Each structure stands twice: as structure tokens, then as C-alpha cells.
Image 1 (cartoon, rainbow, N blue to C red):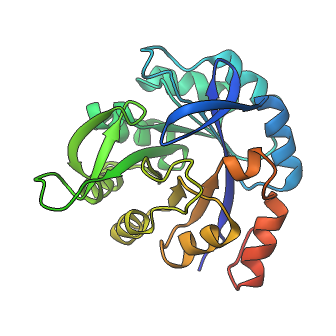
Image 2 (tube, one colour):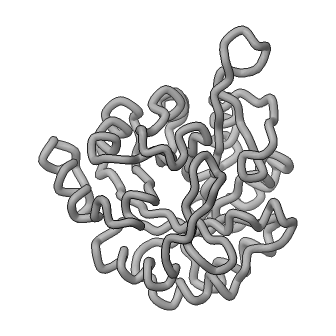
Length: 256
């Protein structure tokens, strides 16, 4: 087993870190620059910054917000939200961002994945996939891709999309369950395992972490390469060192 990454996520709205449940009822959590600096000090392996309303509001990523975080971050830094083309990606990478993450635009324009991988290298390209569960027998995929902050269904089966994303050149997948997001009831292990076993690129589990056991389950049962969380870290319920210690004590290799 490769070393497992522990990744805090900064969901940004109006320049502040926010957190909700199932992508709704967002509450203010903290200042993004302060949060980024704190997570770097604590030993986070990577930081993800998502301008969560950029696509819904039909605007670009707010570069001024990203720039402030770039100035303090000392670990790999991925940014998503509002990225629509190669030029948007280049603007972020020029600021010092390590990876760009695309979601809705990848579904709308899959060829952008291939072009970006060739332009910047697959190691700098994350494709974020948001998914939801549908009841059996309804004519829809059991695990369905959703876009535009979870507000729009696509009819696409999530494993099929994950395989295509890999074929097109994505370096990794950030997989979020809309149903589990913010619930603190655990990651969607069915969804995570289905995707992780279908592709050979790393899959980061996102959505639903509420206790240390959930991180362990995402790796052991869900086969995730990294675990991303927000609420438990933002509100001080679990620290990065505590999470690493817990996994290490259970035989899971973590980064120092």
C-alpha cells in the first residue's frame, strides 16, 4: 500500500471558508489564509481550495482569493471551481497553484481533460467527480454523476465516467458523495470502492468524514489513496496529527 494522504478542503464562498450538509445550508467556518497556514503547520499532505459557487454563478475562480492562500501555503495546493478552459488553468498555475481541479466543465467538454493533460502534464490535473445514489429500479444509474455543485443530474454512470476520465489523461480523481457530504456519518464506501477499483490513478475520498474510523474505512474498504475532510478539521474535532497517528497505529502508511 502506498502512503495515504490526509487532505483538508477549503470550500470558499465570498472569500470565507464555509461548510454545509449535502452541498446546502452553508455556515461560516474560518478565514482561508489562516486555515491554510494552520494546516501546513499541522502536517497536512495537500490542500484543496474549491471556489464552490463559481460555476453556479457563471464566473471564473476569484484569483485574488487564491493568491492570498498561495502566499502562505507550503504543501501541494490544488484549486477548483470556475475553471472553464486552458487559459483559466494557466492563470492559476502561474500564481503558484500545483494542481487544477475541473468538474462540471470536464463533463461538458471532455476533450479539455486530454488537452490539459498534454499542456501541463497529468500530474497537475485533477478531475473532481460528484456523485449521488439513486434507488434501484428507477431507470437511472445506481451511482450517478452530478454537476454544478450537485444541482444538476447527468444520467451518467459514475464508474463509466471515472474510466473515461482516466483514459483522457487525468492524473487523479477527487470523488465526493453529495449524499454523504457534511453528514459526518462516513464516506460513501460503495461509491469510493467502485471507482477506486475501476481505475489505476489515485482516488481521493471526500464527503462524510465524522470520526477517525471513517478515515480508516475509506482506505481499507473504499480503497482510497487519500482522504479529504472539512468539518472535522475546520471545527477542531480532529487534528491532522491525530488522524495520521490513528491510521499509522492501524498499519496504514502515512506521510511523515
